[in-house]
Length: 371
Image (cartoon, rainbow, N blue to C red; front, side):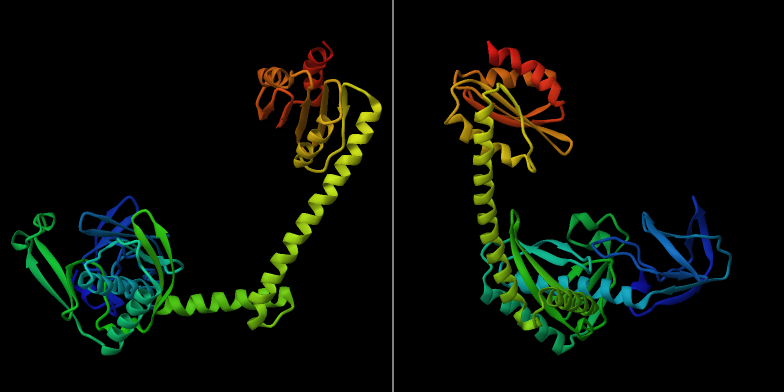
């Protein structure tokens, strides 16, 4: 564990201690396997990429694609180590901030593409978010030294830790001290940046989205590329994207209303054609199952005898039973005896969709509707 006291220690030379199911344990290691909220390191052993890391008690086992032989040379990927470590240290500092506010962090996520923590309060306003961000960046600027001490588990006051021979305490000056076995920055200036991106109310309180250190660089590049792509798609300058997107949404809503009106008019024309045939069974051409729900009510207001409308829309059969005599639900029940049918309605009109064939629906419905 002492190697984890200096997160910048990325290399070591050691020997194989144990081999188990293709995984290697060593006399020493600089790798950290996912545990305690910190993600696993990446890197190489004897030049071979590490494909997995897993803990067996306090022993870390390492996997590579090939075989390993002594001597063992390890090299941890520096960028991944920095990303994983800095956000972990940020969570400790935030614990200190919220302790002074009589609040508590109840859950964290260190994934660099989606870093967040949940504080046990639903009342988190813009002023508090600014205060958190300003406080964290002030701690970064102060460049407070991190220290580690070890105490016997039997002497530690928390019973949960008394089973361990040693308990490692992480100290960030006077801000926060707590037991933790993960890597941490050597001084708070190494966090470099802390930004709050937004919040979301959740059952446990408020989820606060953040970005720290090199994860901020990656997010900035990703978001900038997305902004440029959207800007090009909208043929708008980057500072006009929000305005143009708003105009596009408004235009889309208007077009949807116009399309709905046109469809209603088209269904009215189809209704006239159906009424002209005076048939009990009508097979119609539809582009979308929702059109059946527009067509059927128009017919109900005008027909004087029972009807079945059926349409093949893709792989689904869309149907409507129009029954001034009140048999619609009875016909639906017969359909449901044949197989899975989604739909419902009143005794005078039901609509729905099914995988059943058009011919099967007609065979069941026609005798009932003609009776």
